[in-house]
Length: 441
Image (cartoon, rainbow, N blue to C red; front, top):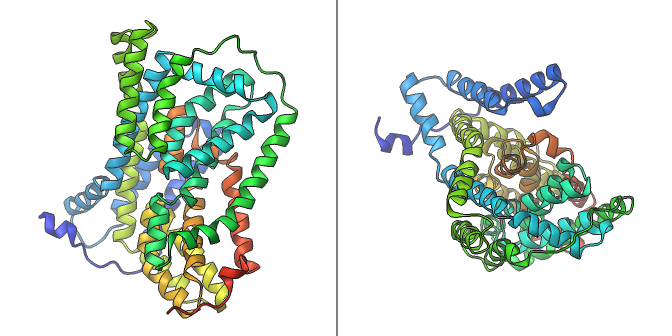
């Protein structure tokens, strides 16, 4: 089979049946969880293996060899491979930082600076700030999850709760940042200025973030006394400060992680807390610990490519666009289309790009302000991305913490509240300035 034939696949016809691999994955996951009475024991890799095999079985009109070629092309998608490289470097950095004492030092610093009752709110605000600065939820999760794990161990806060705080806050910036790929995709496809989209979007999600911050402050009032910190080893905090500083400066995530790994080795050797052989072994362990995560990511990429090839995304778009009634219905349709497309792609940027031209047509027909349509695209894609167990963000958090994705999902308070505020923005035509009838020039 030639490369050109893979690059020009047959045009998919709308098909509900094409979405069945998602149902197989969800059904198997829930069935095993109910039998075991524990979501933490569900083998997510096996669930993906069955769903991936099913996606190949239901594909008709081509040989098994050609089906596997298309499935493999999905696993070799540029975005999938980029995620895998990030997973590898993140695993190496997390373990090398742990081996030389950087994580413990950073946790001690946080405990030293923040009052006990503000630990949860402080971590959430840090996640919001970092993600807004770097424009990526994955980068924020890589940077803060190890710190959250350490704080959970020393404070007695449930680990899934702490990881959920980080993941939730990470989506604040993913949704709003000027350098976020979702923001860029949403504004470009809808034809609006980033500043206008930011203004419209912030009026929807900042109240949600403030409400969640108040909740974390309230939850912290009943917190027991944290183990006192005798001293902070400032030099061992440097690898995290270097990583956060470079990330905020907008340096490429690969360079950030590579320099962070080098910093752990240099500082570990200088302080004799992590000699070269121990440092190398720690990196190897970190990479090996990402093995299941990498396998799951590859299978998800292949499965989602088969869903697209068989017409699953086309089916969703056709069905939803045929039932639009009025501006509220049009805005609701925009939200639903990007959510369902995100379920099928596990990538919020790709979902926005996929449905961008269709939603622009809808917004023009029903005179929706492009800043509002861009905000809805970005917000609801981030909401869906936060709540799918096979998304890069939850997979990364799972790989770093060893927690089941479902165990984290129940504590994703910010994405849930953000979703509620976004729905209310549709129902009550808010923000007013961006919800009035709009006519493009």
